[in-house]
Length: 293
Image (cartoon, rainbow, N blue to C red; front, side, top):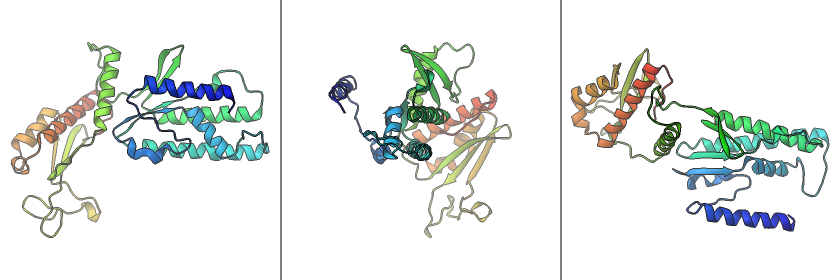
């Protein structure tokens, strides 16, 4: 690193610490996944994929800072290994469901072709890495001259019907808040949990007991052991409801089901079920996929 680059790094660090007060900086050249425990229920800005890939290319000796050269065949093989390694690291990170990741990258393939083979190899793998991350992302934004251009947006929130009074910015803010709230830790209800899905043009809600009898077996309210489906490891639900609307289901569960009072569900659990079946209803009638939050 020459004097000019050293000064640039110092200015970047100072600017980062000034503008991003309250943010914690983790400098991890290769394996940020080692810090996943610090990222729980956080928004994590990964800046940037280009320098991160450079570190992997150096690690796998695709090129070196001292100018050491390798054969074209060795370079291609090393680049493949570096690319596979960084993709695996990204897979490890995004598998942590209760963290929101924002990846910054560069579209270096938009300009002229590089004059040397090493730079062209890097540009190719940078482009393929961008495609890989974009395929995993729920939203892809291309910034040009400070102006955001949305390239991809996956909207399964059930919002955004025609005639909405909300602006797109308001919808984006609401979606971001929902994503953040979905990553918070929740206290499991000790009596059991609900699974919600769409099946055969109906909303299906299943209650799975977590009650344990004196023999240490999962049981119903009467202490009877709950059997596993087809002899497998997953147990059968204690109760299943099917309906066409959220109101139909919540009425059946919380008003008509005699055992509901005995299970003494928390207010938070009941509110959660209400939200989920309402989302499921919207997805059912809007013909869009539903996935339980």
